[in-house]
Image (tube, rainbow, N blue to C red; front, top):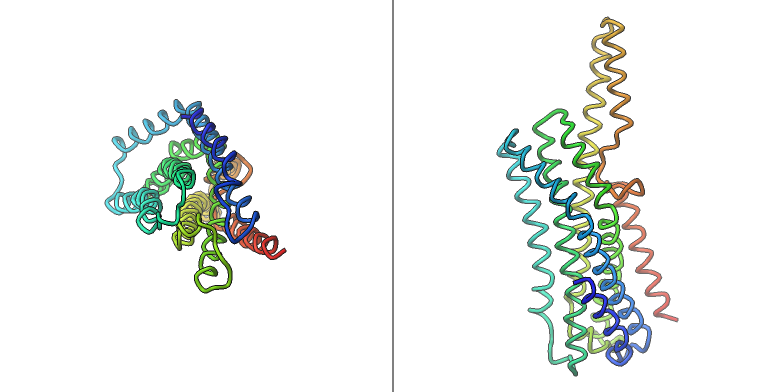
Length: 308
């Protein structure tokens, strides 16, 4: 699969200058060439990373399954996990299905354009499924953590997942920001072509307005990941605040108890239990704001170069 994906990226890149001609000139051609090639390469890299980390993934899933058999979650937690996992799965299937259903295949003028259309969607579909798979572990930890005040098992699962799947999450995040920006740009260009401001390429005519929907769904999935990370951060802070509240309400406890509580509190501070990518970044509302700012800047730069 890795070699096949790499081969597809080389073949598509070699034919893109002939495929994506049109009224927009070479700018849109180079832009979508970059999008397709980077997605194909990131998909191949992601497959390799998941293949190398398959044992860690299996061990983490087995650990959560054993935890569920030992400490059954509440009905509220079951519903929350089911809804979040359903969102990741349905959105992974909805976007390609919506693109195919709304596509104007008559705008594709050759077999090469049809090949590009298919090759453009497959890496995105694969990375959405992989991102949902990685998010499923964190989803389980978030909702299971609501039923337990402090559980070292869930914290260890989150930290191990950060180390084992940090590179995979970084690939998914890179493609998500890039594809959301380029899809939004392509959708705006398509709408400008419909109102007569400019003429769009045949590739954009085939995709239609689904490029805008594609970008919106990708950003909504990123918001869901940041919301899960923020919930983990709140759960970790809740335990820390509970310990300090205990010391504030019980000022007359013995010195031994005071030292033990403070030592445990210091240990919690040292153990970062946030959902993220290694120690580079963590998925929370702070990161979400920064990524949205980068997305807006990226979109503005695309239009600035387009105007030149």
